[in-house]
Length: 634
Image 1 (cartoon, rainbow, N blue to C red):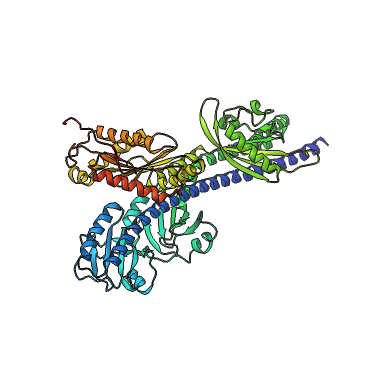
Image 2: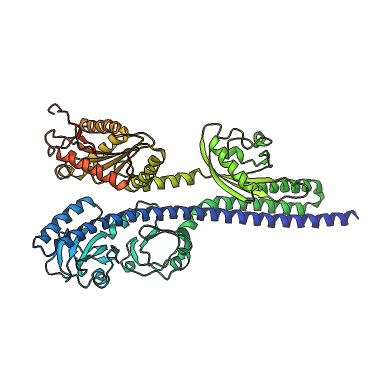
C-alpha cells in the first residue's frame, strides 16, 4: 500500500514537474516575444519620428523653392516683349538665389523651350528644353500653381535634381514659357545622414502620387520609379498619414521595417527604414544573456529531477527540493520589470509589485494601504483624476505619461496604463489595475527629435518653421487677452561683403555670436527668437509694446556692436553691426490683427533702418529710434 501511494505520488509529482516545465517554457517564450515586440515598437517609433523630421525639412525646402517662382512669373508677365526683359530677369534671379540658399538653380525657359536666363554658371548656348517633362506638362495644361516634377539629370551640371516648375501665363492667357527652380538630390541624401538608422538604413522621398523623388543611399535606378501600387499607398496611407509597416523593398529586395509620414502641406511622403535583420540582431544581442541564464536554469532543474528519480529513498529531501523549485517558479512567474499595482475605487493601493523599488524608488510596503494621490504633483493629480472619471463613466482602459521624482531626486518619466477590473459577486466595487513602466529613454529620444526639427543648427535659435508656428499661437493669444505683440526684424549689415571678405567659416562664426547675443537678450519663456533665413533674424516679444521693444532692440544693437567683430566692408565703424525694424500690434487698434501686415510693417521699418545708414533701430512710425553711438577707433 505504501509502495502504491509512493508510486502514485511519484507520478503525480512527475506530472506537476512536466506542467511546470511547459508553463516555464511558455512564459519564457511569451516574455521573449514581448521583448521582441517592444524592440520592434521602439524601432518603429524612432523611424516614424525620423520620417516626420525629414518630411518637415522637405516641406521647408519645397516651399523655399516655390517662392521665387511667383516673383519671376509676375516680372515676365508684366514685362511683355520689352527688350531689357532678359536682363531684368537675370537681376531678379540673382536676388532670389541669395534669399534661398537651398536652391541649386533658378531659370526661365521661353515658350519655344529656349533658355532665356538662369542662375547656373554651366549654361550652354543652343540647348533646348522643349522635350523636358515639366515643359510639356505646362505647355499642355493651364494649371498655374508650382508643380514638383520627377527627378532628372541636369543638362547644366549633370547632377540629379528635382525640378519645381510653374507655367508662365501671358496677359492673353497664352503659354509664355516655364520658370524652374531645382534642388539637388544630394541635399536630401546628406540631410538623411544626420539620422542614425543603422548601417543598412534607407529613406525614400516620394510625391503624393507615388513617384520616387530621392533615395538614400543614392540609387539612380529608383529615381522617378512609380510605387503607387505598393502596400504603402494601397493600404497604409489610406488610413493614416503617419505610421509604421514592414515590407520587402522593391528597390534592393531587403526586408525592412519602415516609418512613414505624409505632409499635409505638400503631399510629400517620406519612408525611413532599417533592415529587419538589423533590428533582429539588436534584439538578439540583448536576449542572448537571458537565454544563457534560462539554459543554465533548465540544466539545473533537469539534473535535480534525475537525482530525485535515482534517490527515491530520500523522499523528504526530494519533496523539499520540489517545493523550493515550485517557490522559485512562482517567484519567476510573478516577477516583472514593470510596476503592477491594484487599488480600490477610492484610490487606496491593495497590491504593489516589487519592481516599484527600482522604478519609483519606493518599497512596496510603503505604498500598500496609501492613496495614489498622496505626495503627487498637482498637474499629475489632475491628469490621474480625469482618467479615473473616464473609467467610472465606462472607459475600460486609460493611458497617460507623467513626470515622477524619486526620493533621491532623480527625475523619470512614467507611462501608466489603467485597466478596470470586471465586477464580481464578492467584489462589486470598482477596482483598477495599473501597469507602470519607465519610458525616460524613449521620451528623451522623442524630445531630441523634436528639438532637431525646431532648432537652427548654426545659431541654436529656433528655425523659421517653428517661428511661424509660434507666431500663429502668440497672435491668437494676443487677440484673446488684448495684449500687445511686437515683432523685431533683424538683418546683419553688409553680410555678403563679410562672407566675400573673410570666408563662409568666419561668416558662420559671426552669425553664431550674433545668435548668442539675441539668445541672451531675449530670454523670457513667452518670447521667441529665430534665425529666419540667411543673415536675417526675427524676434517676437509677447505682452510688449513698441516703447518696451525699442529698449530691447537698442540693447541688441549695442551688444552686437560691442562684439567688435572686424568688418572692413561696413563703414564707418568697420565692425559687424545690425539693423532692426520694429512693428507692434496695439490691442486698442480697431483694425483686425493680421500677421502679413505686421511682417510688412517690420520689413518697411528694417528697410528704413538700412536706408538711414544701417546700425540703427527704426519703428513703424518711420522714425529712427536709435542712432549709432560713435565708437573709438579700433
